[in-house]
Amino acid sequence: MDGKKNIVVGLFVMAGFMLYGFLLIYLRDFAPNAAEWAAAYGNGKHFEARLAHVHGNLFGFLNIMIGYLLFQLELTKGQRAWVSWTSLVGLLMPIGILLELVLGAPPYFVLIGAISMTAGIFLLGLFVLKSKLVLAKK
Image (cartoon, rainbow, N blue to C red):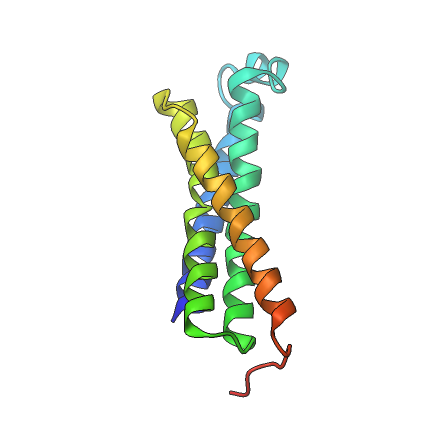
């Protein structure tokens, strides 16, 4: 089940951040103050908005990929759980960027998420390296 929750959460996170991308397009091209938004597009809050969009989609996709690999690779239950949960906690990074942008939250969520996603990817690589790299037979 560890892989399934990564895939499901990853798909919903990607869908959410894709919708957020449509909001960014609206603000840049169609909103009443679109010219001002476009003029400041690479600075401050606009840059953070784009960072959240890009990292939200990337981390959502990474969770989909990780979930699929957890289904396919022969790893122990404990290895699957560690990779699954660290990757899911990694979603705090793009969510944390949005929390900073909208609520002025401190960057702790961003740091925790970035460290956790990096740890999840590293652990998956380590576990695959140590494994026989035999795909699970379904």
